[in-house]
Image 1 (spheres, rainbow, N blue to C red):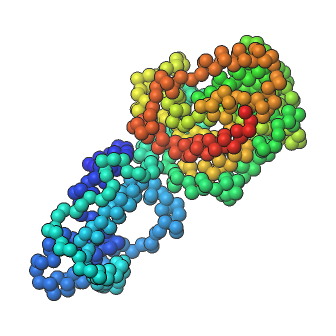
Image 2: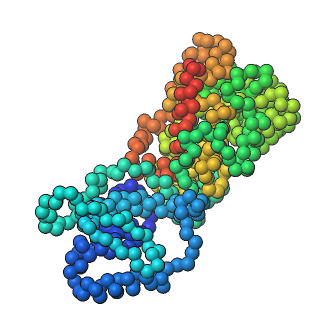
Image 3: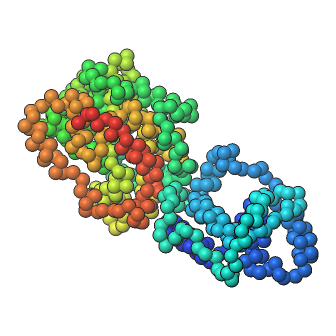
Length: 510
């Protein structure tokens, strides 16, 4: 209906298709075949053509034929399960157009249906329409001359009030590279970027439920149990003698600035990657090293291999680190499995709107000099080209919170990610950076650490270094680029909305 035979579709294509149906097509439904045929006859004046008896006999004969029917089991939304969801995923715009067409059909029945009576023919396999309406008690006024069908109340010149499309057009790209579960973006090209997958039933029905009360598939329940062994619930107060603060680092969410604030301004001893530099990555005993005036434990908790090394050196029970930073929560949970469960992790994190984060990642890749020829592809790439490419991330947060680095995501993955955030992570927001920092200090009792005057001066200086991509490269909701990035990060968008509620729930801290 839009003559767009290849490439991604967007809201504008759907609106054009709606407008064509509304203004240029008289709609019938296969599900109401008999009534649709008589509506066609009424509209086009065909009921006055030919012999009436012959027409009726011929129509019954044609409708009783089954040589064009396929012998297959029926499929409905409730029983179809994954198959229904997969087919729906590929046809989301058509689904919405069909719903719009149902409204047009009802308008046509009101205008041209009159007292049409549909006779069931053949074996009655076609759906029967409702019985004819009783005659009105008062004769209606004279019927005006036939006119073209009046348009429905929906104005296609305005965007329809519908949910944003869940369809990911980029799953057409069969050559998309594998999803690369790395945290270091300059190395992204080594594995070839991220694989894109269709997302079944992207608008989760579990959003209104408490994620902790939703039963997940055994495999995902086991993953939550794995995290629970290492991380204690955030509703329990922080106890430095029994807990190690673990910052779940989401790239381009202020983690770099926060890392410097915690070490340089508050004076905490950190375990990240700094302490493993200058030949310390292979140290066989733990110690605290000084780098640019700040203190770090001599391990690297930002990589799975580094976490394994830190585990072997008993980082968690050493008491040397005040906080450890990582993107790999499932690997980090293993830090607490060799200390008799005497020490467990306390997760906290800083979130950012997924679309703004994606924009920031692009300009980081585009404007940073990595000295890597493989990354030169981003230099001449526009943001829209990036959003359409296989390099653009897909639901980073949900994947890392569920340890599902490749393959299709489902509602269950989103529910698990919500449960982890709800029970295991103290949530802060980049958009509320100052308030979030204050909350961290109160929850972890960091307000009593370091010199207060130095903390205030240092904090202001660090905050001036914050990411400015939102103001330098603004992207507005409703823009083409916004829609493209949203389509690739629908689960992360839902998780972010859920996190906003969690943030409000912890308003008592600051």
